[in-house]
Length: 353
Image (cartoon, rainbow, N blue to C red; front, side, top):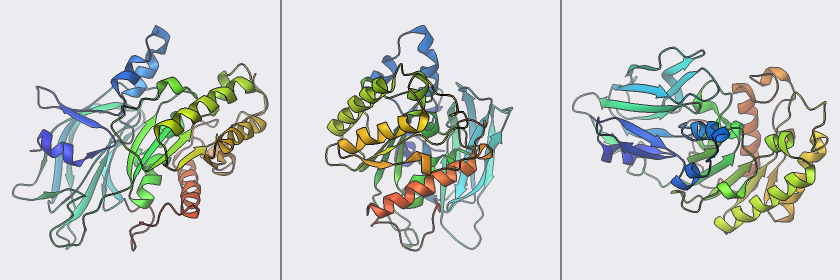
């Protein structure tokens, strides 16, 4: 049975705590960030903050099975139950129910040994809800190794991975990938086997006040992907650009010397009617220009994903698994262009993990 110290060694993308009942709960936002929303009408943001987007258990084992009990709560906006279990990068189990039915249950997962003693097991937690886990166990008498340790036989060498921090809105949080391992942030981290911290918050905008220097994660690479909600909400393009400029300045202050990338909004299916912020494409170009003026590298989201409604789960805004794949692949190519992937593990193909 996994204890708290075991969990601290294998949980990435957030913090883990153990309740008196022996149940493990997870968080990816700080106390300051939770305290930022005090108005009753902002309660939805607190629910979305509690979602376990980007959090995973990731480890090596020679076990032939993995078992745990789960309880899903705090479902945000969508009636969906989701959890992915990946073996050496390939999804081999989990939950994908839409609408969600089994919010409480147990998973008994068989690990296919296939002649290999060791396997890497990654359990991606839901991005659309919070989840509590209990009674996590492997088969009797087996071993567990951390990613930093590697396996004793050397098949999986230990390594310290680069750390990727992703700020953004609902698309960064994961909406609307069916599988949590298929969000663009998760896919981007998996391409290069980077450690991910997903700080995406559905429905949110450029707001420097939400940033917290106490976030318990020191990234090597930072991405920012706001703008699509700003286009809906801002009273003018100028107001949105000012907010973006303040955000970019704060990000650069928090993470000096680190590569920072701004991802502008993806194509939307409802851009035919301008908002108070004006036409969509000129609005996005203004945000890109604000980032470039500060020396922040940019990725033009308008070019990064399909301009077709069937790549959007809701037909308007949020990419499905296909849209997420295109987005992440485009971003990965940009990262390679900038030489950020020199430590990419030779021999492993894209999205192995």
